[in-house]
Image (cartoon, rainbow, N blue to C red; front, side, top):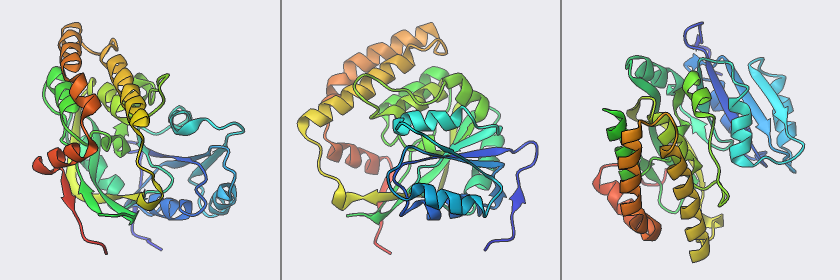
Length: 295
């Protein structure tokens, strides 16, 4: 067990939010990584989204081991967006991190992101690169471009560059999370909610990228069936509608809103029809994707 760590003080209180659903096989490893950080979190909130497996038993076992854990159990399933927003609304730290129930953090994660975020007065979010692990056909390193400059430039870059679903796992100022109102949803579903969330966050300030592999995302490639054409269209419509709403938020300057919606209308046919393979090629050309060998 790690014993060399720094506990969050009054100026660095970090809330780690773990939305969990049917996570009994992976949750212990996720909790282990969250509770063994160089900069210890102020609190770790976990919500069991009406799981039907042994998730509750895993949570109860860890509650006895750590006073930092605050646990909730939903009687009716909220879905990953609803469950995440439930936790964000109850986080009492000055910074928040969204940690899915099966991902794993390096010990340097919170400290490095905190230092990167607080060193930039214009930044509202800091994130690191991500490495695939688990059931991967081709393990990869993923990154996203940081969003800097004027509000218009930040939002155009968010719109036009790949992998902008990654930074929502980073360290976010809690006051911005409250202003944004959590992850959005649409009548088409929740696919793309994390990107629309980032659009809303980027309206308030810059994001900082730490190009280090401090975050590990578990994959289940052999269990995932390729989406049908109908599913791809519905997912893209869901993402498009949430992003359209994000641009319309009153936090976006009126002139920027007009420019961004014109750009979005012009590129929508491309984004709706672009195969995922081309997006991966684009990410590789930008240096935001690199193949990694299996361990």
